[in-house]
Length: 161
Image (cartoon, rainbow, N blue to C red):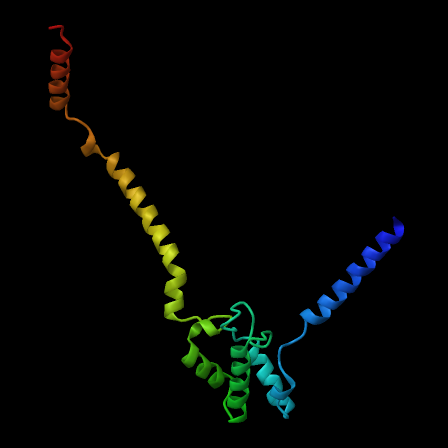
């Protein structure tokens, strides 16, 4: 029993060690790496902010997808051509849209997207409050004359007849 438990524990430790070493690996291939270490560092930094359009929840630096590889190569080409980090990001966004950014930019379109639910909830609350006030308003009560007439009608309908 103890030997089986030790074997199971050893297998678990080996599995975790392999998982941790593989899980931390980047998908960048050796043929993609730039000779200039400064440019390569910039490329890696930029790649961590760009979404793999195939995997969607991974950066292109982490993804093994072909499209991610193409994007990594594109980023490196733009850096070698002399683009700044901002120019590289703008170029990729112009080709693939804002969705390619793992952390979207703050702009009017994104602000409208995030603000819409808040606006709808506030508008609904205002509608409910004004509706409730209108129901409880003085114009909803019967006048003395109307109450007298209603009482007369009720008396007539309740008479045995």
